[in-house]
Image 1: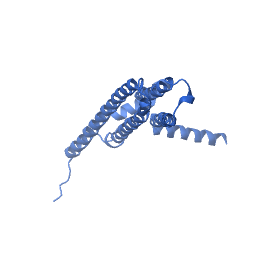
Image 2 (image 1 turned 45 degrees about the vertical axis):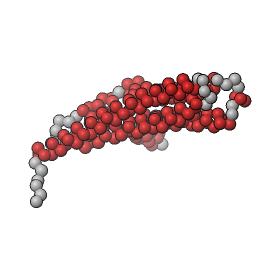
Image 3 (image 1 turned 180 degrees about the vertical axis):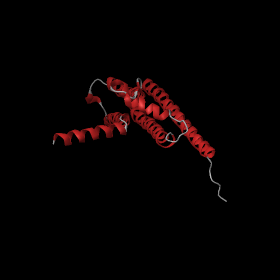
Amino acid sequence: MSKSLDNNDVKRGVDLEYNTLRGEILKRVELRQQLVSITLTLAGIFMSIGLSSELVVLIYPPLAALLAFSWAQNDVRIGTIAKYIRENLEILPLGLRYETYSYQERAKEEGLGSFRFVIISHTGIFLFTQLMAVAIEIAKSTSFSNFSALKWVLLSIDLIAVATVAWIMRKISIPKERTRKSQATRVKSKSASE
């Protein structure tokens, strides 16, 4: 026997879904922060050991790159959930508006205010600690001719890891909506000039 849903059932369902998704956003923000703490802890461990041991510090940059990927995945999922809430739950006449309001406020900002500072600060942590690890190992050598084949391989892997972190963080720092807007603006200006 089927039972039709009344307005209160719909409101409870939307409220439950909204609260569940907001809870997931908060959990993912917490996971992002833990990943940064883990990154800093590992950086400290590897760099302190690396000061006295050969090549150990060069293991850190690829590990930091993997942690950065995990951080980025959580950031992307937070954005996806926020977009779902904004486009699917907040359109209903239930008074839910936080994600829409937050999105509109970010869209109004230009210049320095338009940057997502969380990405800038965390990217800085990942990249700075990776580059420090490479610099520590290079500083211990008197010349590049003393580098072993293993050291060259590890340094190459490290530089790829650093470039990968820079690339992934750059990729997630520009929201797709802004990219689409700028592409649409370029297409309009190009067609106007022709």
